[in-house]
Length: 234
Image (cartoon, rainbow, N blue to C red; front, top):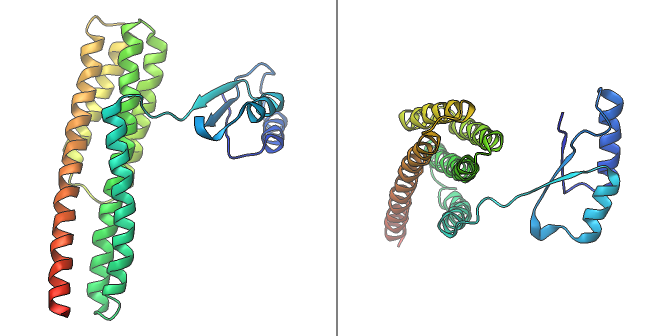
C-alpha cells in the first residue's frame, strides 16, 4: 500500500493522517508514504518535518523538463486566465440581454473551459508517456508500466472532463488503444516497445493539436463577436 499525502498539509496534520491510516488499516510500518510537492514551495526545514512525520518518499510536481512542452503548458494557463476574464466581461455585456442569450453564452464558455482543462490533462499524460519511453529504453519496465498507468488515468480524467462533448471521441479512442497496446508491450518486454510507446505520443499529439486548433478558432470567433457588439452599441 502506498498512501499519498499533499504538501499543503502541515507536518503535524500529515503525522495525524498517517497515524489514522495505520489505526484504520492493516499497514506495515515500513510501507511507502509519498508526499506530493512542488519544488518551489518546500524548504529543507519543511522536508525534515515531513520526514519526521513519517513521509519516506517525495513526488515532485514537475510536469516536464522539455522546453516545448513547458511552453505549451504556459500558453494553456494563459488561455485559461484570458478566458476567465472574457467570461466576466461577457457576463457584464449580456446582463441586460435576454435570459436565453445569456444561457447560450454561458454554455459556450463552459464548453471551452472544459476543453482547455482536458487539454491540460492530456499534456500531463504526454509528459508521463515521454518518461515511459526513457524508462523502457533503459529496460526499467516496471517504471515504464507505472508511467503508462498514470497516462491512462489522466486520459480517462480528460475524457470525463468533457462530459457530453463527444466531438473528440474517435481521437480519444485512438490514444486509449495505443496506450493499451504499449502497456502490453512493456509487460512482455517486447522488442518494439519503444515504437509502441511513441505511437501513444503521436496519437496524443493529434488529439491535443485538434483541441488547440478548435480553441484558436473559437477564440477568434469570440473576438469577432465582441467587436460586432461594440459597433452595435456605439
